[in-house]
Length: 71
Ligand SMILES: [Zn+2]
Image 1: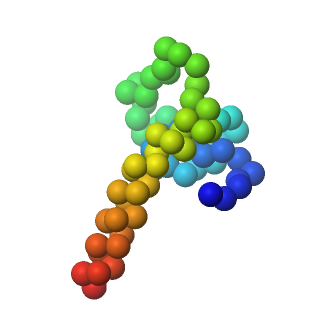
Image 2: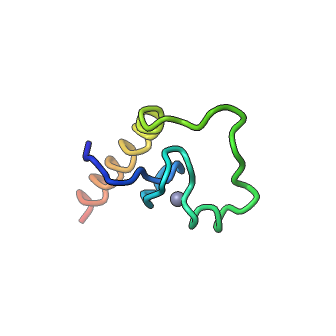
């Protein structure tokens, strides 16, 4: 884990910096438009986002290893 000056966008896979933890970046707001809606509860914390995305990051890493092995 690395420390960052700004938190990343809340959407999985997007690393664009944002001002507040749990908010989407402007690019995701523009791309997803009205499909992107606020959750009914409080915004996710940094720890919750890290936990939620851990399996996605692991899957991406495995895909990278497979692609590198196929070269
Ligand atoms: Zn984003």
